[in-house]
Length: 297
Length: 163
Image 1 (cartoon, helix red, strand yellow):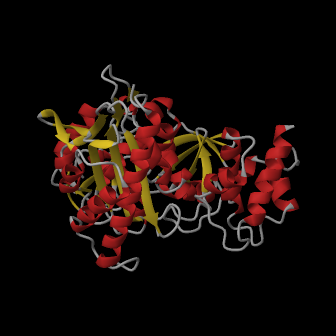
Image 2 (cartoon, one colour; image 1 turned 45 degrees about the vertical axis):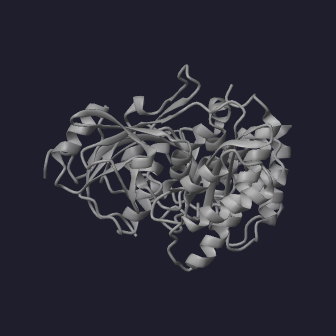
């Protein structure tokens, strides 16, 4: 099918975009970034926005900056393929680097942006899980100015975020990796590139064979990405052995709230959440051990 | 209509296969439809129209993209390359030769997209493994060949293009 008619706007700056979004706040306007989720819906007329605000012409939204603290600041419009090719991303955000190739397909990632994926907030998408796992800070700008939103407060519900209708997601800021920490992103999907049935991001930091700190975030098993706080707490100080990980994986699965669909019942998704959490923790811990103090340096 | 560019056609200029085109285009016109219907360049095919099949793949400013997921107005000032510019002076591109040689097409509907995706893939990786070819071509569907011949053809084209 073809898109229904809409009014097209192409602001050249963030200020211009915000002013447009403010003027259009009651007019059913949608922000168009990479278009890899919005355009299919517009083509199929599942979405019929009256206005499209195309931000692709805003050059200063596409950047990869490396602050001195060792973290990363990524402009919302940065294409996923560019992040995939970035040596700085591989070095400073190995979890993000491992998740990127699992998004859609290579052609989708040529256009798809980091900010677009977060703002779309698909419950099965990879980047929201990465953001929640890494405690990313999402930079949002509106008529009242800039406000940082912690990833823990960013996702509200299915396809819904804390970004208001007159605001724009402008930057994703990742804190520096902890030295010695290992990361893993594992996913179960019906086929390569398909929506995740369950996606798990994990990080593990070890001290002498014991878990100093672990982080676990999941996608596909609830309306928004799930952070397994209780399991993380339970892992602290425990020996890095399969039994510990299996227990934490069961706790993690119990904290999920999966929806049934044709690809799996809630029971199946919960079972797979446990299996893939265990695998992600194992892999992250193995990497922590093998990289020693090098990661994030 | 509140302050926006109208729904009415707006002027769009872009370079396609080396030629500069200027047309008045409705904002909702997809890039694939602009190429086929406004420019009459029907080498680019349109399959699913929602970014799954890859038949409409073209190269925009060096990156292979699905042209059904881009508006023509978004390609203002861009350099677009379609399958129609692959053969030069009646001479098939090595990828085209390899596709014919290895029976990498049957009905041919997916082929224009396959070729354009393969071209950018080989530009980045001139000596790929079969696994890398499969991953690099993950945005393009073929419903005839079963893909083995496509992988064979791209491997062979890579060899031809390296010499």
